[in-house]
Image 1: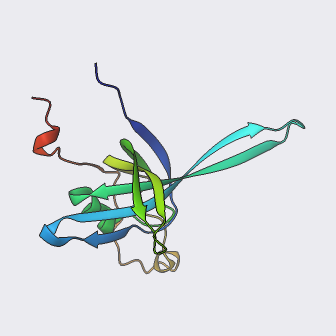
Image 2: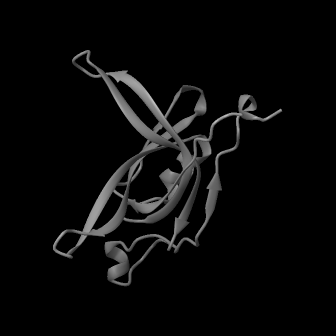
Length: 142
């Protein structure tokens, strides 16, 4: 039996997605997601702990991220945990662990912009929507 590699996160975007359009028409988006949890320390004080996650979205999900996702927005992400290596500018091998998104749902619409605070919004509010990455041929179970 194969193992299970599934990550589910609900959090807030730390920055607008950075999207690159690659040769061959593919797109890739990178962004960070903050999740918070709470605990009580020895004195009984409630302490908030923020964990930052690197998220990568490909193809249609990257295009959706570019169009709809903004810093501060709350989203649901479902995907797989991946660790990859790369060479930095000094030639050192570096490793990064990220979540490769299979599904992204926008929760609570778009965050407010300066124009909306003045009642001059030019953007239509976005309903909560779910977007899924279509499997590639080699990912099909048959």
